[in-house]
Length: 198
Image 1 (cartoon, helix red, strand yellow):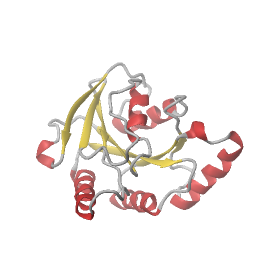
Image 2 (cartoon, rainbow, N blue to C red):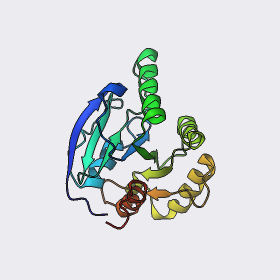
Image 3 (cartoon, rainbow, N blue to C red):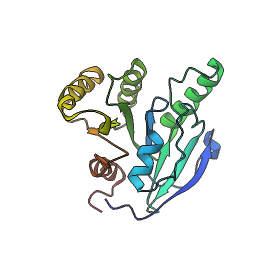
C-alpha cells in the first residue's frame, strides 16, 4: 500500500469528540515511550506528523490521523507510565478502553513492544484483552535497529512465547530509524482496512 498523504484530524477524550463517518481505523497501542508516534510518522513517511517526545506519557488524548483520505491511524495514550497520579492513569485506561470497546470503525490494533526486552505484564494483558474482545491485532517489535542480528531470533522467540502468539498472528520487527518492517506493517493494515495491494 502506498501512502500519498496524511494529516492530523483531531484529538479526543470522549466518544462525542471522535471523528464522524464510517472511515475504517487502525489503532496504535503500547506502553508509554515504546515508539507509537515514531512508528506512525514512519508509516506515513512524515517526520513530525505525530509529536515525538523523550518524556513518557506525553500523548494524553486519542489522536486521529487521516491517511490517503481512506483510513485513519489512531494514536492511543500509552500505558504503564508511573510519574502521573493513579487517578490520571485510571482516566487514560478508561479512555482507551472506551475507544477500543465501542468504536465501530476500528478494524485492528497494532500493539507495540520494545524488541530489546520481553513484553511486560501490561503488554500481555493488553494483547489478551484484544483477543478476548475479538479485535484483530498485530505486534510491532520496535527499535529493531538497536538489537543485533544475532539476537533477533531469540527476541522473536521470547515475544511469541510471552504473548502466546501463534505462527499466524503477525509479529513484525520495526525500526522508525531505518524503515525496517514498514512495508510488512502497511500490508497488515491494508488488509484490515480493505486496501490490500493498493
